[in-house]
Length: 143
Ligand SMILES: [Zn+2]
Image 1 (tube, rainbow, N blue to C red):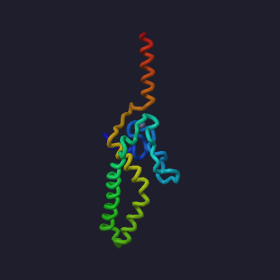
Image 2 (cartoon, protein in one colour):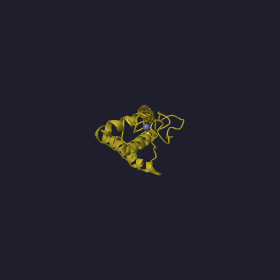
Image 3 (tube, rainbow, N blue to C red):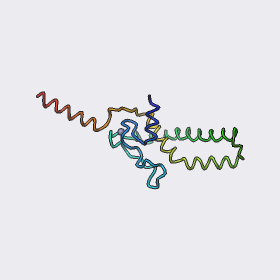
Image 4 (cartoon, rainbow, N blue to C red):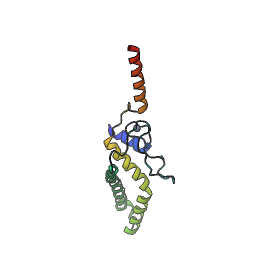
């Protein structure tokens, strides 16, 4: 099932393939020290995050969907309960989207990456190295 893995990867800022390495340098999207800086590859399984040049242009569609959902939620809340003036609603929604920008930017990229990479619990560089060591030991024993 992809949805729980996608949610886990997005919330914890973890690599979609191994769920161990970080995607963004900082786990906090509101830190002042480069909150939007992505790593080139996973430190654990060596997955290259930008699979091809311009790969993350597709994340704009995910970001658009998330922001549209937020706008629709505010709009429906206004129609049903809040009854604000259109100017105040526009300012509130704009402020809300500006404050949520770092979270949406990071989430959109991680979700986009999860569309193309599946979680594999056995896939990590360490496990591959251990497998190759065990394999070479067995070859030595057999000879
Ligand atoms: Zn990884």
